Length: 273
Image (cartoon, rainbow, N blue to C red):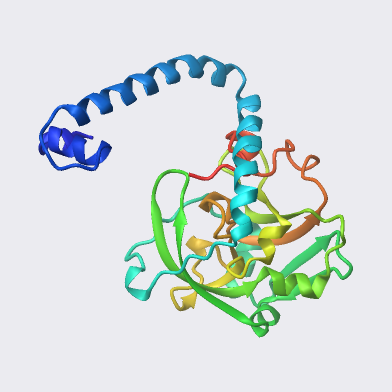
């Protein structure tokens, strides 16, 4: 906003609010009304959100989730080109510190096995070699972080729907839970996890990535496996994946909100930017 006002405020505000290029005061008045409305709404809403954060979270899940359920029936697909790949992709999250993970890392994940269980007909333990033997999906997509930044990268990995074909989920499996080797940002609260709609797992761009930008997925970005669900925000694409579980409900996991950040930061399971 500083640059908007510092580099010809009237023209910029007209361009932003009315789509015109002139120096009338119309755009400024529209901006002032929007700012006043937003400020009043914020002042009225803040006491309620601070007093009832969980209720606000649930309302957001219900309202936004219902809208997204309808939009996602269109099965959106986003692809970028090689020239769009970010020169630097931001590192985020709390890295694993367990002896088990450090041992896997030192061995190049030779003995790592992805545990897949829950409401499935055939529980499996899959090595990286077995996962690499499955059909490979490559995609250049944008990661949208709830913190406001974005980054484009090329991901290579195995589609979740191909794993599902192997394990055969039961009819009552409605969600898929991804557990990380890493702990969440709130100390002493346990391992990071997040839940996803099983319908999202059927999307061609929902993968467990073992490559990033044509190279082996680095530790800082989630090795050995990082979920990529391109229908959701970045915090839901769990890094350092340890296991996958198919469940009917997530209410018995953690605090019952569908993920670590949903439990302790009041994010909602269906509330992207």
